[in-house]
Amino acid sequence: MLRFPNSIAKNSPGCITGLKSKFCVILGSQWGDEGKGKLVDILAKDYDVCARFNGGANAGHTVVADGHKYAFHLLPCGILYNTCDNLLGNGVVVNIQGMFDELAQLDKNGVDYKGRLKMSSRAHLVSNIQMMADKAQEAARLAENEKHMLGTTAKGIGPTYASKSLRMGLRVGDLADWDLFLEKYDRFIKLFEKQFSLSGFNKQEELDQLR
Image (cartoon, rainbow, N blue to C red; front, side, top):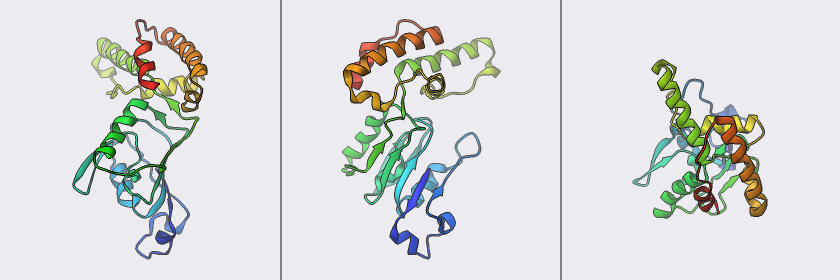
């Protein structure tokens, strides 16, 4: 997580995050569950911008604010503070349906996030077929030897980054032109099915979700 201090935080003797630099980076150096989300939430109220620069809707974290519990997997938890803008950078992989499910929690409790959530047009989209591949790969590892399992959450994170590395994935910006997106989407599904030896994927169901 990347955070930029606001004018109040810069002049506050109680805010020593970033050692008076213009930003503060929070990184996890292990396998997750280090408490990154909790730390970012603690710092959020003193910063203008909360930017997530990589990762996807994986394990996530729970935040309790004003008596309401929120389960965030993709959204930066700075979204709960009305003075904080929130960014999803080009290194993030975005599950659109999952993002709207998280935003629904905010809508339900009257949290105003209008104009405070922005995402890079270059961020890659997580497709249902990538989640399908994630599950299939883990099942194959289990069938071979339980010790080979990764313990993936099956959210399609790994296969999406694989598609990005292979330069065959879809990006958020592709949605700006629906007709062109349909062409790219069709090509992507064909390439992905071949790459991961998959078949029988329901394209129309996903397109209905994205439209």
